[in-house]
Amino acid sequence: MISRTLIRIKAFKELYSRVTTGSTDTKAAEAELMQAFVQTQRLWGLMALLPSALAMVAEDKVNTQMRKFNPDKQIIEQNTRFASNALSSIVKADSVFVNWCSNQRISWMDFETPLKSIYSSVVSKDYFQDFAVKENPSVEDAVKLFRHIYSEELSGNEVLEDALESSNIWWTEDLEYVVNKILEKLSSVVSLGRVEIPQIFEEEEDEAFAKKLVGTVLLNFDDLAETISSYMKNWEVGRVVQSDILIVAMGVAEAQTFSSIPVKVTINEYVELSKNFSTPKSYSFVNGLLNTILKDMISDGRIKKDPRGMVGGLY
Image (cartoon, rainbow, N blue to C red; front, side, top):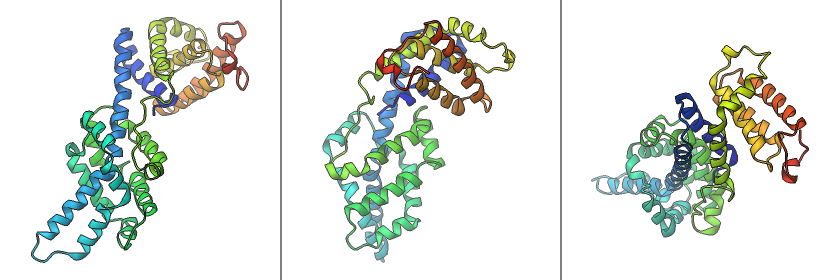
């Protein structure tokens, strides 16, 4: 589930908090990093439960109408169709997934207000009306419906984002990534008839990569910073932000430590990271400095790559 790109992002955040406070406890840093990955998986679980949770809101709407002296038949019909949609029914009936969520203490019961906010927004949209007027909506109709919901109703929903942030400091930033992962697998939920619970890491060696990256940078940060400063003759050192130094340090450490990762991949990853997590001018700084340092390290043998790390050439 967790890609190498997300590993680097979370490693950067963990390292930044350590470097700026002077902490060099690698074991604590690794433990916090692993906990951040676990929380990403838990957020996935919450979002994967959404079809079931929204169906329950629809069922409550039906029950409320049924108790009225003069119930609204249209509201009953539309909410009944939504509550019984194929995707929600699969999620609700998947005992393995539901039990996993229960064991992880994942539930929309703790997010009743944002859940109702999502539903209120959904029922006001044309895509909901298109679904609700169908006599016998198909499985494909249900998948299409939830593609709209996941794509349009979560990101930017302030009520949801505030609730997620209050619950867990990692969740708001991970929301878009998690939603994209769910969208990738939405059709397979129907074809398999169940929800596949993803492993935390996409590849078996990714956990070791994450821990080694953080440990290497943290233990060697002073030496890495000294190396970087020796290449900064054309830059105004006083105007370079700490995040840029850390990003370049991570790139250098990765290039030296992981012989199977091509240098081009490392440079591209950390340049992209600088675009999203540093200043507007960081892109050119990180790109120029990292290119220069790694070229020299390749030339003098401080960076060596095995055959996998040679894919596409050393540079």
